[in-house]
Structures are given as structure tokens and as C-alpha cells.
Image (cartoon, rainbow, N blue to C red):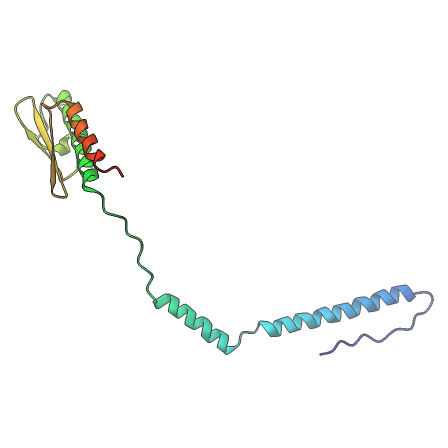
Length: 163
């Protein structure tokens, strides 16, 4: 579609400038309308575009994602050190329970410890042992042993894991 300027209105009584501006404005508006119509015609997607888009969406839906990166296994030394720390914390809770109630708890859950891999064994009326078995490794905390020895074992276990 070609742009046809509106018919010129002959100027009269000194209105030349106003009529020229109005004519120029009308020509510009016609051009804008034609440009908008051309854009609307250009936006219409063809059947090939729709097929390609549907194919890409289907492929994205059915193609499996690559596997997520797996975290490396925890080194045994770190597992052992963690088990030693858990036994120490459980022993502190057992001591606190004994100081509050005057007797050892019959189960660790009575002292607020809910880890199923920990167990409590009384040695005598004053001393006890908390043991943990994690990944086939059994770690024991004995109340007869000073805490510094227990923590030295934690440090030793972790020192074997330094890069």
C-alpha cells in the first residue's frame, strides 16, 4: 500500500503555514498507520515456526537432564571424628541427667539424645560408656578417661584427613 498525501487544500487568507503543518501531520500519521499494519503482518507466525517451537518444547520435556554432580564421600577419618564428638556430647547429657536425677538414665533418649547409632552402657555405679557405630567403625567414650584424651583422639583422626 502506497502512501497518498491528502488532497491539498488551497491556502486562503494567510493560513499557508497552518495548512502546511496540518498536511504534513496527516501524511506522517498515514505513514505510521501503514508501518503498524506492516508490523502486524510480520508478527504472524507461520506453521513452520509453530512446528519448530513445539518440537523444541517436546525435546526439552522428554530429553533427560544430565546427572547432578554428586558430593564426594565423607572420608572415614572425618566420620570417626564426628562420631567421637557425638559420643562426647551424649556423655555430657548423661552427666547432666545424673546430676539432676541422681541416677543414670536407662536409655539415652531420657537424657535428650535421640541418635539411634549411640548406646549407653553403665560400667559401675559411677562410670559409664557411650559408644557409637557409624559406617562399621565403633567409637567409645568412657567416663573414666579424661576428656583431653578423647579430644586428642578427635584431633588425631582429623589430622589424618588434612590435604
